[in-house]
Length: 370
Image (tube, rainbow, N blue to C red; front, side):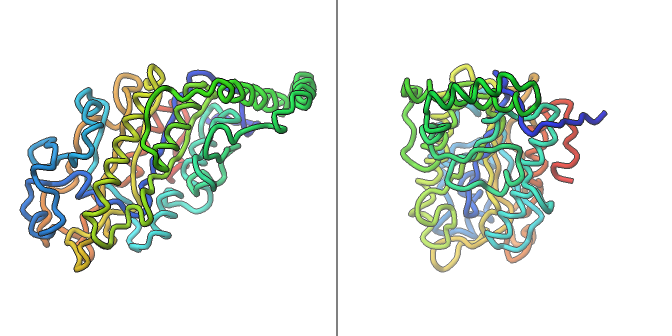
């Protein structure tokens, strides 16, 4: 049975499950993040860029994590992590702009996939139910009900924190029994919680990498601990100047990018404390890199890459399962697609959907990805 809502946003709900989407913009090389260290084709194709077996934490005898992902191993060992190799989309453009647009819109025209998810939920998000960490609203949230874009919690205020104005607004909305009144009261309550958070200078006591991703996840942790009803948020992991777009001298950049990804997520999960039980992280990229290294000691745009789902069990299990999903068994030339790409054997939408179902049971999610 379909539930119809008349309001766009709802009141704050304590204890909401929160989806955190970490976007590795630039086309992250899944073969470096999760090296297939036992495949001969991998080492033949990358005589200088293949991750040495001594720098791999073995997972199943064939695949392993790059050693600079070590900070995530406690979550792997406690069964709170899923690794999907050969993950990607059906877009074959090899263009950052087209591939990112395809992924963020879920392969559908119009609104972003996160926006459609938020509108499909049987319970509408509160005024701070949707937050993008950054300077612009990402396409995945285009069309979302409400939605706030901020770089840090201290950026958020209402009426310049003028108490007289806030008191006047509160008095008006308390007399309004409509959905507008409820939304207004919820917004004022969210503002009050964040004002308390800013006043106490809550940093959570955890040290994050001083990077775009580290700083962004630190702010997300503040919102979750403040229990403002955060349902979904996105943070970009862009690294340095070119980020994950490692066409040139990949070995000089990829290690620090991988370490930032792992250490930022590990600090975030440790920072959450008990609230970690209601948070799921999905980390993904628009496409992977070509299997063979190029003449500039880098890798060109490819297809399949890797995706991660990290979090505590929801309703008894991590959405989609745990452990390693082998998306391919060979990197020999006859096993590749296109101009020498890792094949896409798992659509990223199939990685995302189990998480959405676990976070919004009973909601009709058929329109999220079509």
